[in-house]
Amino acid sequence: DYVHISSKPCDLQCSTVDGQRQLMVPARDGTSCKYREYRGVCVAGSCEPIGCDGVLFSTQTLDKCGICQGNGSSCTRVTGNYRKGASYLGKNTTKNIKYEE
Image 1: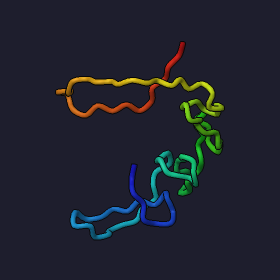
Image 2: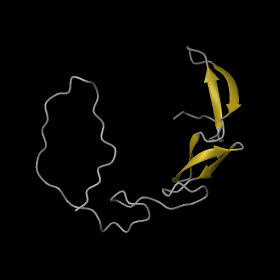
Image 3: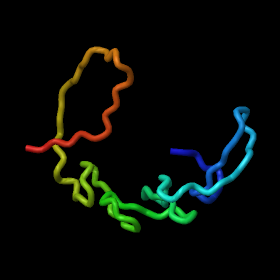
């Protein structure tokens, strides 16, 4: 990920350590960007949408259960507490949890 200050999400800015702007360059094709409410990739200097199906120009989205183009009916509610001791290996991150019966 990167932060863009231009109105063009596929322009990258290089700066010095003290934050002074040095150079504006186009992002390479395939660089992640945001296209309206969709995720996208830079293609020839423009941010183009990619749906959850991985298809360029698709606007398919994940439902609340994390299913591509789902209807939100496959979620399973889980209640209770989960406790685990501290990890000595560093940061623990969970991105997606899929549950199937």
